[in-house]
Length: 494
Image (tube, rainbow, N blue to C red):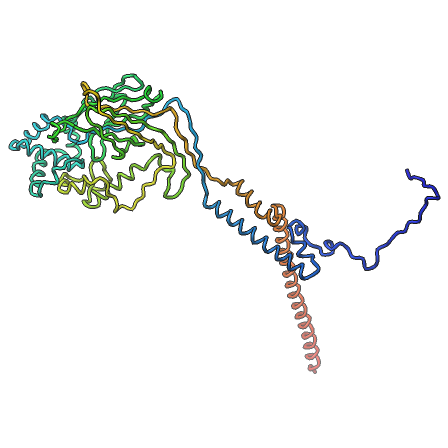
């Protein structure tokens, strides 16, 4: 409701009308796109009235665009390079599977001497015992097993003579079949190696519950821990205790024809066993191996790791050794490391035994790179050894194995930049320098598309209109010419 003022307080109010030269808002008058006000500095650069201010603001815009583009490119490059970080956690578990522990006699000649030599005497009756032992060395070395050091001292004529003896002895068998036949008849058995096995204080059958037979490169018949042998108590309470006998050694005279060393291999592969890392056990010695478990889960990278396999690429490492030492020099392979389409070597490879078999690792001629799996167990090993206070009874070698604790270190590699984080950083660069958001970018894109379409439409319309005008003029000209031509013809006719 309007208020009534006292007549005495009434004052004259003047209304000022805009002059004729009154200017409208500069933004509206310029008719700029709406996003120019959102892009910091652009409206000032477009609407500045003096040249100095225009130059200043355009310089500011160029610097900001350059900085924003540079930092954005750096963010993109960093994202493409995939920077990573590793997180480490300790995980407690109720049990841990023991790694693939493999037990081998140091010299691969653990045969029943009486039976094997009698078999040789039956095949080659005139052979003396010393020559029969040399034949055994020739056979074992030619099969691709090591520690037959005497072969390097034999001359070529004597090696050829041993080869003739071998051909008589193995008549009717191939190389692999003959080796397995002799092993089944005269080779050492599991119960000739293991005296007792206990896991967590409970006695187990070593041959049926704990270990299985395995042929290992350059070592022959060995025994590997079975899968699923788990430690369920910490350290000493859950340890695996092995008491082992000394198997025979038919060619080792220095130790009275028994094995004076046992070799222990620890790997993460239960099928293919590498001959490293290895540990040597001696008679009447206390040996304690402790593991610290660590599980690695890395990101797949070229020449770093692969998701195709789990653990180390054991097969690749063995293949490199075989190709370099046997396949390439002699164009054959070992029967227990068979490669398809390559003939199996005969025992005459013993003629070059030192270079072919005894050399530990020579694989420089093979260019293949053995890449481990991205997901693998890495067990840190510590070995304690000390002389026993008194000789062991009924066995010669001792080995105790366990994890320190029922836990493992979980190491996981992750990218430090995720897709949402990458988008956030991209937006942050232009947002910091120009105030540019995704909405502004969409507006700019739509404006550019609309401008291009409009320009194309105008150019096309102008071109079509020009063509139409030219055609119309040509049509009118042709009509005039036709009329003139008709009139001329009519005038000429009588």
